[in-house]
Image (cartoon, rainbow, N blue to C red; front, top):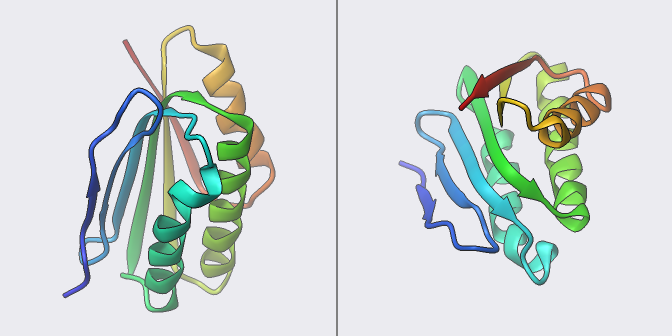
Length: 126
């Protein structure tokens, strides 16, 4: 049994829920921590460890209101790790949620999608 990560969101940091045993990772809210590297480092390490022996199917869900440029760099690294595992045959699905009319968040998701070869689904909500 792997360790589940649950972090409550704050004004500057997103809520994170990662359940390795179910292969589900979700992140939601605002991501503008003082140091994105410090905030995300233990989370990235947990995901990288998980990806060494992932479930048959993994789902990564993003429901962001705002993402700083330093957080975007962390997301790019995460997507790079996911892409490597996906290319080895593991099923990886990315669901990118964005508020109806929030073109910035849709565009960010599209930029991340274009930089990878991961299966992406864009989902709007109100």
